[in-house]
Length: 346
Image 1 (tube, rainbow, N blue to C red):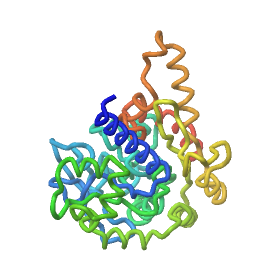
Image 2 (tube, rainbow, N blue to C red):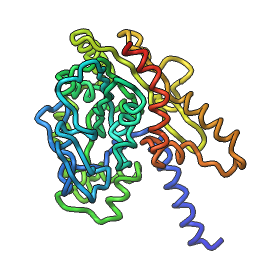
Image 3 (tube, rainbow, N blue to C red):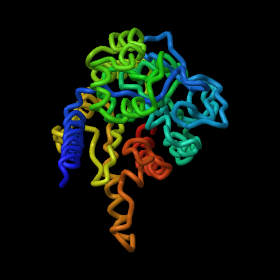
């Protein structure tokens, strides 16, 4: 091989290895690529530092990208149909609490969200979508406290996702004070290695332009143990306002399989996870959704004529990113949650 080509190949291989190491040991902060300052954004700042931001009420946007912007939000500022403050006599109200998995990032039709599909399955039950992208567990429970309790839920389903381990709400990528080149922005969003270097060196002013004061206020408000403090507050609220709680563990979908939301690849998913231990401590029901998805995938592989041509779990159940449910993923999640929710509200 020509020396120059050999050098290029060696550099590329080194970068690939470095990227893998950075991703594995996670020294680079995560960012959520949506903004309160994007033109037409469906998000706005919140005066509550525990939340940091919320969704705008009464959004109507025919050109929505279904990530920064959504076609529709209701009068309460959620991706859902309109609600009445008062429950219809004789009905139960279930509040679905979570982040972008619940909000339905990546799908534009409200009917393709978990909440709407679950609502369609439950007679005499109203399911409310309380999902906001980028929220951690403590932020989600704060949202319940600030806006959900007034709606008098009979039950709350907390959908727990891998990134809930992050102790802040929305490391939101704000509009840059001095927009970087397109390639630099792409690398910042998609490469942990590049993001780590760009932030450490503050190249293009990326570190200083991420609105550090509001992010630091949010981190300080949430603290260092967002899951434990969030679950403790959820327990207090459930006792004060007489609602039941179900914790649903949302899987991470890979090409090679479907795994539990563990804190790290080294955590043993055969033992109770932190979120399950806390659910048990506070007397909450909990359910892992991964086994049901695995069973569904096994059936599809068995019945499919050519096993080699069937899509992977990531492509089948998510919008190809391994996390956010596709319409099929949302439909199956609603199916798997139907019986546990019915038991919860009897």
